[in-house]
Image 1 (cartoon, rainbow, N blue to C red):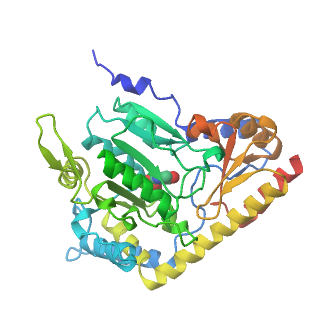
Image 2: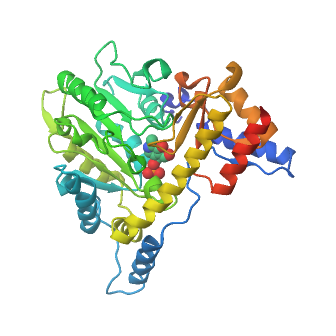
Length: 398
Ligand code: PLP
């Protein structure tokens, strides 16, 4: 008899976006003539920029020739991409990271989920609430205990330290789903907490490219001491439209260690390379050449234009909701707008109302955790026309 990993029975049956998709499909089947607009899942709609497309084409042509064919990629990524990441994301910002602390991957979802492979089951884990569902679900799958750190208007979406010290803390800034950020000083307090309690911060910076305000750190390593306590995750998905291409990277500083029950102290950098080389066979060469082109001067100029396009959508959504008297958060340093639902509706009640009466899809806040109940997330990743039309329809509802 096959025995199930029973921790899988502790996570809900449906990944949040699968449930959203199910309800939308049901509605579309019942009302095929209605045009549904999605400001729900955070997926990109604008084409990948020309500089990246050109690099992908060129890399594809190399695959057609035995002399330039590339087979398996290095587990940690090609050096050309690692050097581009290093220069642009760290050296140019005055951050000291070494090339062998960078691990290129197929995206931040895999890495934020897989990182638990190298961490003991007995670690106490703290997760901000609401949060990107991967943190809670993957830790439940592994059977770890989770402490939730509520982030609500009452604390200005700045998580308070847990009552009991924890070993691992997930922080995501700019935040999905609330769109809120931590200032340097606020993030420093968490780095200091981790230094004091010997905890590990798992810092998800997937939305780093959307930061527009000066006092918001782009990397946790801008904070002194962070290399001793933090792993950082980055993604090309929202930075450069790579949701379907799949590329990201993770920084595991060599200073980071963890102990065994025998009292040994081992390097997390070494263990992550061990994990990746065992379970992961590298990111496609073509995709890595595309990611490298993101850092070219043309690539940078072009991705900035796309990001500004999405952030103009964010402004349109935020202004529209505020004109209706709804309180909104985020949308300034992140492509997400988090709003309190009107008239005390639950998140799913508001979801059904918007779907049925305005044919607009958003994401119910409660799907991101219990502190998300009574909130709703809109994304700025639509095209302009749909975004304007969705806001118009929402306004007509009130
Ligand atoms: N981290 C956060 C906070 C996200 O919102 C997302 C995607 O929505 C990811 C990670 C996943 O990124 P990737 O597409 O690189 O797997």
